Picture (tube, rainbow, N blue to C red):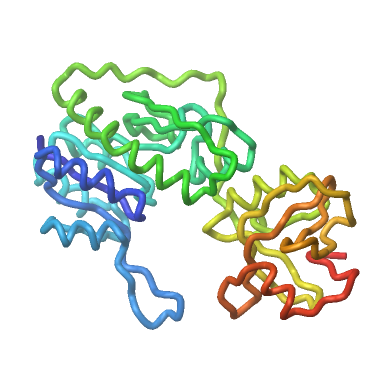
Length: 310
């Protein structure tokens, strides 16, 4: 089977590796162009580019994958099918028609739930108990094509978006291989998505990651886990500077003013709209993450110290 692969982040690597390990020929790998590093001085290749080059595969990094030039390049590869995992570009009809059996996308939700850019993050933030992955044929809509295969996976009480996404990436890789093989062999039966149960997973913004302490403890917990590790939950400190926060743990303790800090044994607690939560780590601006208790000792804050807006 001749396969074109399109993907960009680390979570796409297991699927690329699984296709290669299954003995299929990857004719080319499409990924996003190298991006500037944090300081903007050096261009950083995507994780997929790094993995593909280590595997000795041809890598294409077009600014616009659906440009006429790229479409002709893909057609010339004479591929049976294309596999897509978190590529990061909209693929137009001309490109979708450039392989014999179309383009199969691995999406990290059980469609039609959580169509869009951040399905894992939104599922955690919404308090879902179950998620999964789906393979489907790309069409002109956003995650609307007919589904080839699905799997389900429980969302654990302490899962961060990064942990859950890593797990789904590993589970989804063999699902993609099986889906590609079934499609090319002619025994896949893609099923149109239901119009019931549709939800949308919009991209996570920095504003989504700002902790609003007067929400209930379980909502604060879900929010922080849903934006960990990226973009990372954040709040303001008593001096109005910004700090990032690690996951918190709701605790059975007397309520306090939302955002108010207090030390209880070896824990640093923060008030919410209900019961407090215990901080795990905190990273004031320009500093590395540190254990919350160590930060508290060094910060020497008063009894009424508060996170977030007073």
